[in-house]
Length: 109
Image 1 (cartoon, rainbow, N blue to C red):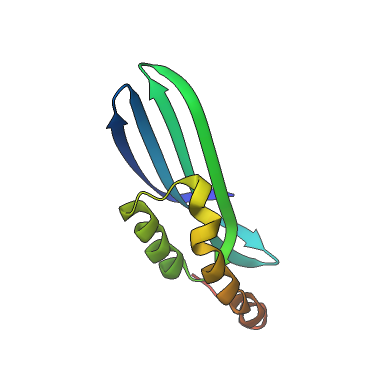
Image 2: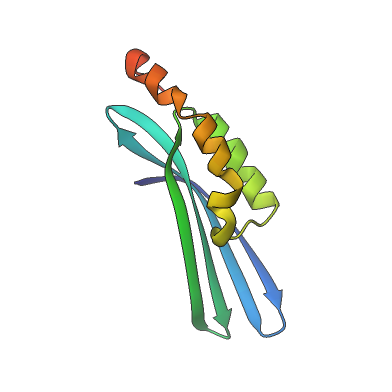
């Protein structure tokens, strides 16, 4: 997994600070560059980390721009790592065909 881009936000509620990181990641999948998303949330009380949640989907699309658009929607709506798969799982399933096409074309991004 290689980090391509990262977007962060910090939200506070009473004593707890929530730090979100939304990452565009890439990896090699059978000779094709595949893009994915990782979402991480760290909770802090003062300087102490009291919670860490992380979820990712390594392989979403062979098209970077499609995954970035999806990442920005997640970022803008502050989607939690706990809900990542529920929210984009159907999208991922619908775009799995790209890898079949990409195997024949060896798409370059």
